[in-house]
Amino acid sequence: MPLEDMASFFNSRVDSYEEHMMREDNPIYVEVAQLIPKNPGLKLLDLGCGTGLELDEIFKVNPKVHVTGIDLTENMLQRLRQKHKSRHNQLNLIKADYLKYNFGQNIFDIALSVQTLHHFTREVKIVLYKKIYVCLKQTGFYIESDYFAPDQAFEDFHFTENKRLRAEQGITTGHYHYDIPYTVENQIGMLKKAGFRSVETLHRREKGAILVARK
Image (cartoon, rainbow, N blue to C red):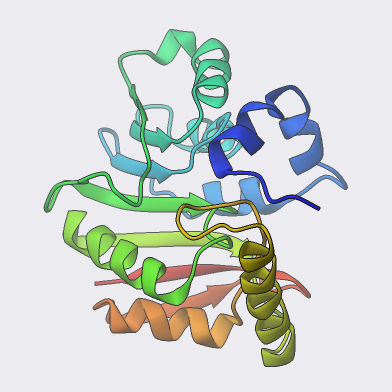
């Protein structure tokens, strides 16, 4: 099966995205929202915000939060704008590759990613985590909710398979849609290597968990 580049993959699936992500009454968006403080004026960075499923729940917890949302796909961002057009003063939506975008320094109270980072290698993730660390205030924290490999053998298989498919299809650069989840333990190691002092694991399930990393 041909690998699709990330932007094309998500742009073409915007109409079915929310139904797909909410199958089986997916609880992660509510669980993530419960971690957001209710402080008015809170500044949140949402990486890979998509159509804003996590923001739908976060706005219920903190209606005054200010959000900078970054996503690669214009179709997703447009859907998010339509859903929350009354909040245009609270939403700064940016079409960009968050791996390349400069988040700034000491700006955000919280950075967040929900089911978006399981496509990238260890080296790419550590560089991103360092940028997240820098953009957070000293009391800030980072929340990551994602798929994780159940064991090392699962991680190794998909990492190898991704390399095989890229070589077979002549793909040498760029980010393509293929899941290469790491184990929770390896993911925590990356976050600590990037500078985070502590990482807490919450709501751990067979294939997923929420990590909270603090400076």
